[in-house]
View 1 (cartoon, rainbow, N blue to C red):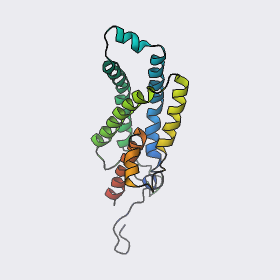
View 2: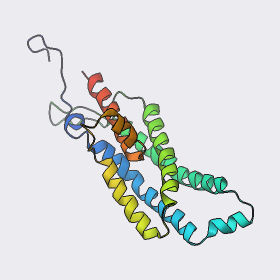
View 3: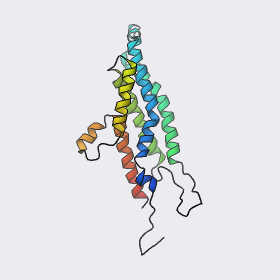
View 4: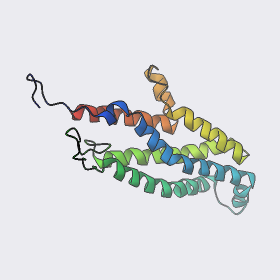
Length: 192
């Protein structure tokens, strides 16, 4: 397709028009586990199980490490599955001439995607322990966790100054959103 001396160009509708959906899909995959972890942490505080464990000599950081390890077991599996599905090239349907075999991430290496999701998992595990310390009722904690989850994965920050964007990266979803935006920019430029 060399029309009037212009180089070949493929307009990727998925990356261009539906690019906002990728961070939302990734974020929603982790949401249920995050909310369950927050609920379990608050329930443990309400039952005073942590204090009973301290009486037996278990330190607080060991208890927090157990919570991080427990949630990371699930998150590593989720990260691997999401990475596999996002770099899996789906074959083209030969029904139209514009059909092309594509993946969600065509040019980014799978280790980059997995590393970003793994760091997101660590961030999410730490944030769930931090967030769970402020509540004594599990239902309230889950409701506020869901509200914060929704507010932080919607991209309200397009026109925000860089300092505000970096500060918002304290929330795991915002950090993932910005990382995936950079990868999508790379994907669009690599396809040209």
